[in-house]
Length: 225
Image (cartoon, rainbow, N blue to C red; front, top):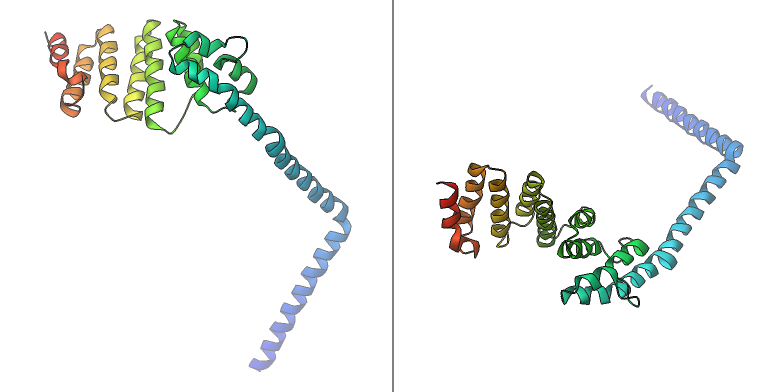
């Protein structure tokens, strides 16, 4: 009896498989044009993406990086106007961004932002810096601190505080003391001495070997008078 039940279940399973296969074949036969059309479309799109990446995008990236090299050299020599706008023969960062976007790397936005700041164009500096992002902590912190400096130059001390806080959080290292000092100064400009004191005390306690710590006592004394 058990043997018969086993055979019945096996027969039923086989019948279900055959029905499934039959239904699949029927669906394929009724829709094979659509199916192969979709497959062909996927292949065309995939090959198109690969072709674009290999023959257009990658060469453009190489070209953009080559164009950026003279601008980077000018930046390192503190020739900010030349680095930003070029000289008619070599492109500056502004032109590179207009033509290539970030194909030369997102650092072009940081370079351009710092150049604009050094040239006194603070809102333009912010426009570039806000487009820059990186997981590298030191560069990220520098960008956020430059944002803070631009906000200070524009008289927006609340925004400056936020930017300096972001700089401290991004680069919790020897440079953080400098950002904390700027944050404290921004708080003082807002008349918030308690918050400024907290920044200066953090420098004193957490970064005692920093350059900023050598004269931090006078800043603490000023906000505790």
